[in-house]
Length: 84
Image (cartoon, rainbow, N blue to C red; front, top):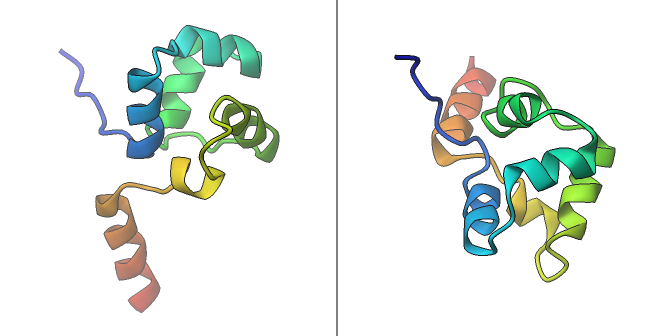
């Protein structure tokens, strides 16, 4: 069974679930397939600025910086790399 990666953007994942938005709907908005969206949500592929803007438009009451804040684990790894 393949190992699933934790979400790269936990707040975005939380908002998607709590607001009842499907990943299929987001993929359609971005004009990509659901598999590509999953790769972006787990950090395997980066979102483009245009994609960030489109997703953020679904959550007008939230700042995009909050939605796209990386997981704490990922932030720790980035900080460790910066210290090297």
